Image (cartoon, rainbow, N blue to C red; front, side, top):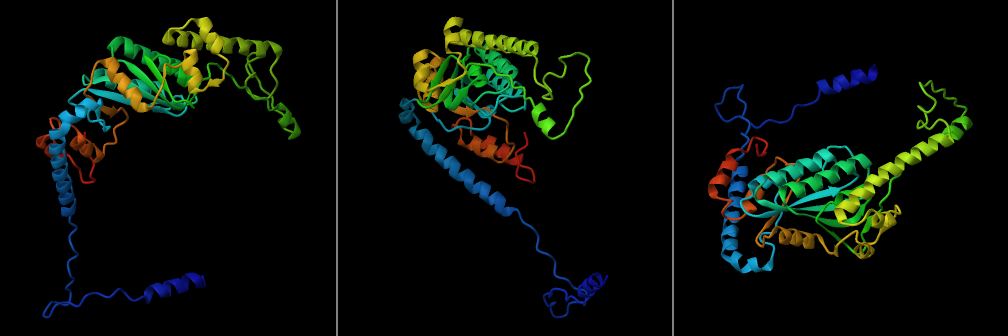
Length: 351
């Protein structure tokens, strides 16, 4: 009570901040007007960036003929495929566990980006940059089917660039591509299927915890982890794993042009180095991401191209900057001016 009262007194007697003295002759109630917030500096900054970008594009266009003989033409990645006006290779990053999370590592996310590549006439090929140790079997099955259907239905080649790991469900997806690059030290392959059922009954007993599962059938609680599996249940789950793994082997055999026996011999569940994968047929060539992009362009029959990252739009000012970095034909003054007009109060581009 006393602490609250002293705080009140302190607040009452606290001196207000000093105010600037009113001008001579001003009325007593005069208060200086607060300074107006100005956004002129934002407009000035955008204008300066625009001028320098246009100058850079002018100089770049004068030297483009000389640089075209080097293969990749305008290789800077852009964030929006809709801004393209010339041939391009789309790059999709599959980085993380294969699962149902809505990202590019899920069937829905991957299909969304493949559909964008299919519908865009400027995207002539796709590179999958894969860095994943696998994940859910069903998600991998669906995603591998989408990759296979994309290549068959659109005629646009798909090339894989393997990063540090391209294993299990991620490799099943990769196996449907037209060509697979890998680094020497990439962990690639791991053709196999696993199901994990944890038995916590021993721990529960030590803790004095008793669990009663009321079920409609004897095996309904077999995967709950509150009791050991019976021999019949173990055999049942083993048969399920074998069936799922057989679909994995069939998918790899179809995608890689190998027999099922050849793939089955490699289906140890273990990964191979990139060097071993090239020797045993699970990969085609040692190379980098840039090698994969060049190969995709070669398979698509294009020599002048840009690269575009196929991912969710950021809906930010970066979209305008990407527009300014495209070739001079696409990045016209009119289009940039239109984009500037669409900037809202927070600096975001509205699409």
